[in-house]
Image (cartoon, rainbow, N blue to C red; front, top):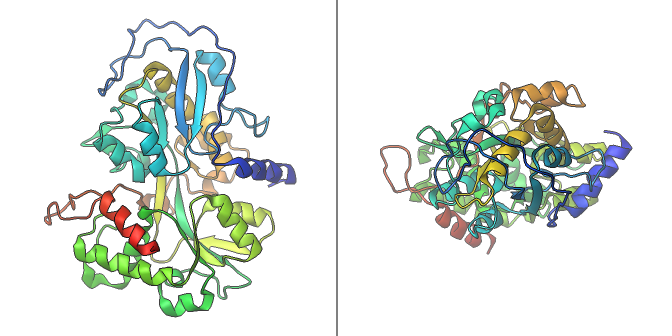
Length: 400
């Protein structure tokens, strides 16, 4: 990564989490032979004329208009081509995005798996007619019809990109480098880095503890880290309470994790590939790996509000954001694997898709992607599994 690119990325990271409003000169919408579509909580049958604007909730870095870096802009062309002015609200966490979508003020959201089922279950988003999104045909098969973006074979969104939750360590302080989740869950290992262990600050992190228990305590019978009955859930909470004694910092804003590893406050913990890449570009002695026990991951989905005021523009946006060239630009800027299989030929770094395992053959297809916990255990146990509300309460107890 060049110094200019680093500076641009750091400039973006410095303002991540702030709300932005993107305005552009509105032009007339293109005509269509189809009748106007409406969402209304049901799947749109046809695409009509754009309504002139679209209101989005985005993760920072997903909706760039050139204001961060003039070379990083996949909104301006969309506005010119469709006449749909893009208005952006940055969502800092999945919980915030769910709350914002429930206001009915937004047309769509780039939701992660710990938000998608809540939005579907709450009737906040509408099913998606993938036939109205031509670029969907080229989405990697491993991203379609997944538990976090579909129900009974009906897609409730358009895949955007994905990544793994990795284990990162400071190679000067942690020797040998961390390769196992035991480094952040086993008391004997944690004691070596007490006060400098970091973890993702979200109830969904309970799944990481459950995954570790799945491998180290098979008698618990955990087969899916998001489908935990009372005994399994309590075991994960107890493990996280133990871990809490060794934690130096929980992070959700990844600029804070970058800062913590840079100044030495954190030496080992969960991370994302983009954080590892940025730290290494800044010559920090860190290395991130997929833990030997396997890992959780995140896969983001563009979802349309069941109360969307601009459903046609939203459908146009969903098709645009996974256009091969656009999807390549977003994936490379944010640091993730693209959703569109044709995007790999357009990345500036020809090795980007290999580095991020875009086709999923190395590890992405084997991850346990963030999925909203529900009472249905998915097996003969019935409706006895802990829901996201239980996870939220449990996480509060963990942090004290």
